[in-house]
Amino acid sequence: MNAPYSSDTRAKGWRLELDYERIRQSDTWALAPPELRPWLLMLLMVAWEQTPCGSLPDNDELIAVRIGMPLETFTAAKKVLLRGWHKAADGRLYHRTLTEHVLEMIGRRRKVADRVDRHRAAKRGDTPGVTRYTDVTHVEVARDPAVTYASATPPEPEPVFSEEAIASPGADAPHSASPPVPDLKSDPLKALFDRGVTLLGDTKSARGMLGKLRKEFGDVAVMGAIARAEEIQPSDPIPWLIEACKLSRSDLRPDGPLPNGKVQIGGIPYDESVAHVILAATRSAA
Image (cartoon, rainbow, N blue to C red):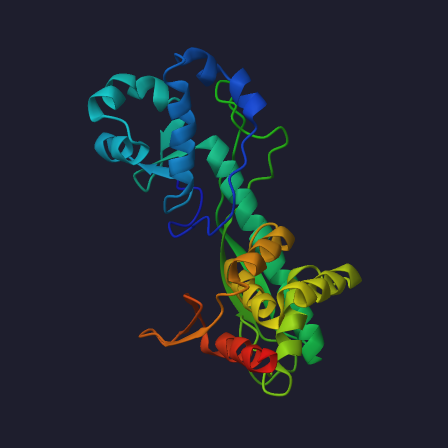
């Protein structure tokens, strides 16, 4: 079995949501003695945080120490605990349940990125290059009646993609796959505010919600939260932004440059262009 997705795939804040009713009805759960059932869930949670996301090392000692179980206990219960896990060509263990969740995550992230690219291109008033996704590998995620951790309606399997940027007709040179950073010097707050609207779906309600957040938490906290959300692409951006504003309301202060070229503000590293916007907001709020 080939690895179902790229080896550098990470969760990056994407939450793992399991169908607990389906878990309790699964054969794996039924066959496991009560004292081992919590460890079945622990394996899924630990694997979700691994790189690649949703996998485990094919090493009993490493698995045992990561889930917090004595090696002797894990070795004795291995047959029950690893039921439904399969070794791929990359030497790691994968579970169909987590594979489905990761492929859904990849697909939704790609759709968000495409929407943001189209919106930015429309605001620039030009015709951007078309990004074509070439299918490199494909994995069929079949439902296993013996291992039914998956959600009731699993997403369609998603391939691993490579990107090939194609120049627009009549263009002198191909456009960059990543759109340029908007001009932040003229109105940095508006530029980052518009990017926040794009992140939320470019609707009137999105503008209204961001406006309310600015009144409640101030420009500094809201603009910092938008910049951070652009970096990690949360699956549900609205509640994420609200919580981020609450956490950063009083902590966004310029702390100085970092060795990697980024600027640290309130303990969080930002790209220099984004830091420029946040610091401008800080000066405006002063």
